Image (cartoon, rainbow, N blue to C red; front, side):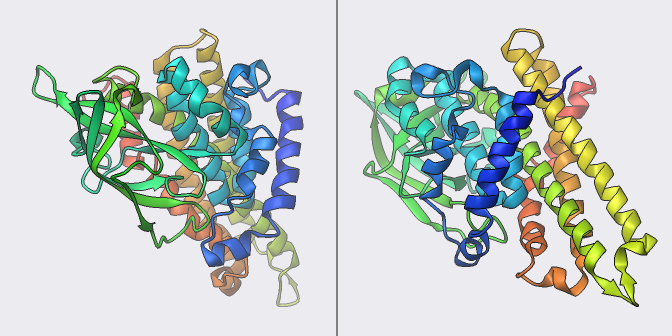
Length: 392
């Protein structure tokens, strides 16, 4: 059975120290101002966080890193702030991984070194205003015109797409029609600053205030034909694989959220006095914290089992089906547990939990998107049911 190695636990302490020193003192101000801390990204790169699943020839950790290490890093960043955690999660899972997995050697050499170092970020444009869970309903189109692709369409809710250091966004687009009449979808890399590539104003979001999120518009946006990622018509399969991995990463982010709530609420319950004694002595409070501890433990075990299976798959020891099922189960349980954890923590804090000066308020706002992004809870239930062999 799987377990975290001593190397993983040592790495956890390194990332926790970084998060507590570099993120914790600043996060309240960043959140209030909806400020994306560009200067933090290269610091994360210096720590090696963006290169944990990347070979050494592109600046990554090579054999010294694995997917489990990435989940450890995301959890520890998410324990301090969810926005910073998703910056790493999306930067690797949606930015780096598609290029690493499907890119040509020239594409990898061009983009990966800067992305791994934190000098740049990349986005992944899948969701559209009318194509969320139904990603096959993509309306963005790309047509060949000589040696160029001409892209037209719009994307919505794209992370890391409009920062000062965003270098490229990979977008899915219709490039034709399959024999069965379904749309042929391909993935095309569009560098930042390309004429016709318009980054819309940042969203005014309920949570994730420190994360960069924009809508994107493409108006006769021309990119060279060699910016196709992988094979033409393979974009649908590519993003499904990308989302499978991303679900485990989001699970790790949810574990960080739930762990933070457990720590914050437990400490508060021990120190908050009511009727002359700490509120922790009341079973109404202590039982809620006990339930929260169970949820955190369950979420963590499911998440790291899925990460372990992912690493085992990379070593040729597991099947794609196993990883897919484990990822969906981990994502479903962990994200719903995180939302419940924030509600419990806020309740324990009482009126103070409704005040922005207390971190539980920020975690409460941030948690809901975990049940939506990288596949909604409903989609995860559908995938799990299919994994059981139930009719589609």
